[in-house]
Length: 141
Image 1 (cartoon, rainbow, N blue to C red):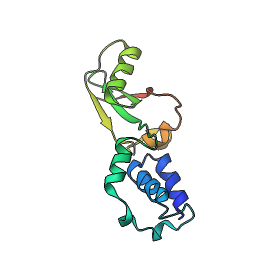
Image 2: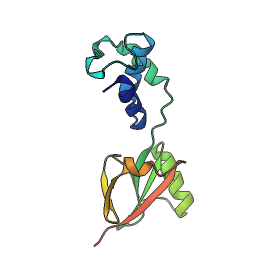
Image 3: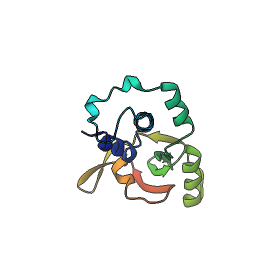
């Protein structure tokens, strides 16, 4: 697999650390986009510089997470947002009440939708603006 393919994958899947490492190695001209990624020596990375790049968000990542907000004993609302506070605010605006709690879920969590199985990561691609209500879930009691 080429460096360019891995780099693109990093952006599509918000792999911020690896993306910044690749960016650093490209900027230092230690690798090119056409190199074979399996032959890239990541020990060449200056971890202090990469940490600063990540801290300064040089590549402009705006990670969107998925949050489960409890509406009642049986009902939960899933909201995509940049942080927990934004998810709670979105909930309040849409449901005119405060959630009972709010927990972040892993984006790779899979759920059944109709006859298909989809991850929150894949479902997120269906939304263009955030925060966004992904859906509601009701527990069978």
